[in-house]
Image 1 (cartoon, rainbow, N blue to C red):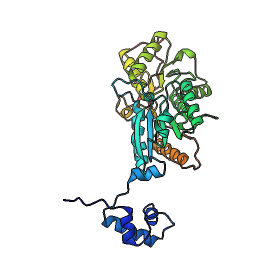
Image 2: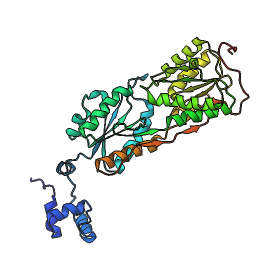
Image 3: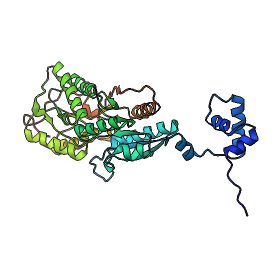
Image 4: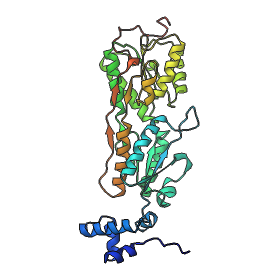
Length: 358
């Protein structure tokens, strides 16, 4: 028994009384074909159960209609090696791709030595979205190479003048400033920062600089002993950093942590030292991950809008691929106040060597 052959665009052209080229244009909704002819061709295509061969169409256009999302492997307590902050962005990126008719390929940056050759040159993807970077200076060298190779790419991260390629990122300095203004308004006198103050980690550094801007404006201390370098955004790193702060013997009545996960680890250390959050020490995180609302007490944090970020990343990259105008963009973060910062409490005494633990 012979199987019925699949219908082709030539079958549609014969039924419609037009050329095959007209059928192709009509199915792409080209304005070169009248609306009436497009409607008739679409009806015939439905009757014949015709499906466009996407692979063949993409090959003719030298396009994969696919974007590659490359994640940086981060240390995590489990085996995912993905910063949970980026997982919250992944859903938004996936939906934005689907709305624009693109597929999404997801992999790790460390799996490839030559991103351009392995994705764009190999026609696996028309462009790259980069999330995470580790050491900024090492990553910048790779970005310079992508620019030289003519790769279409956009990344989530700090936005600099004369940077290689385009970025979508948060105003981290403003986020840190919002935290400092808020804690100062609550009467906190000695605010410690758990996060890197190094040019290799520009986002963490900007959060610290923003905090210092606010504290200096309020004439509060920004002494170096109140800052502990933390690179890894994990609970374990936050716990270790808080213990290092206690080991210095400095008094503090608030902790601003460079991420929510660092803050959660620090809260564990505070509890072990007999300190209450927020009565003895106010704690504020950054990212406003879903877990922040479910800590005890709920964690005050700086919201980075991952939904908007995902949409901006995809839209910017597709504009670049199409040769349209596209620019880097800085998104404004928002302070989300919960109980961990101690809003409404009486002014506490700073914790540390000059105060008793409870």
